[in-house]
Image 1 (cartoon, helix red, strand yellow):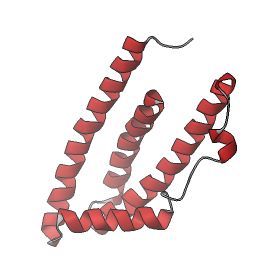
Image 2 (cartoon, one colour; image 1 turned 90 degrees about the vertical axis):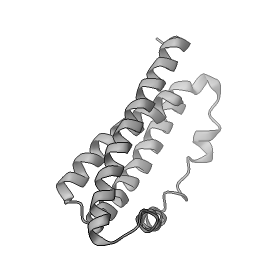
Image 3 (tube, helix red, strand yellow; image 1 turned 30 degrees about the horizontal axis):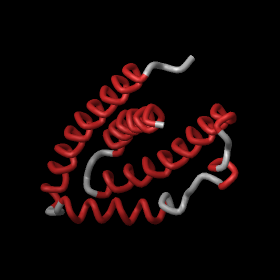
Length: 129
């Protein structure tokens, strides 16, 4: 059963607010770590962009078959999208953890932050589709 538009909108808003709050907390911990190492946020951002490129997330795309599913194949289309999002987020989280540990955040903390943030991002992407 599909949710009503107000429910979907509310879910999306809640998910977005959670992501923003978590991102602020993570940014503060990254800023603290990079300040200790004399690294700028701009440099840390470039490090993440490099890692993302190496993970080839930009090159990953849904297959044309998945993209051409008809409206009748809504469930299949949703499943394909969920798989795509999960694969992309797995690669992004690996890059994220590598960068955070490189700038001085303990691996356990990076993994914990990543797990929580990326779970919320996945929810946001799926709710928005």
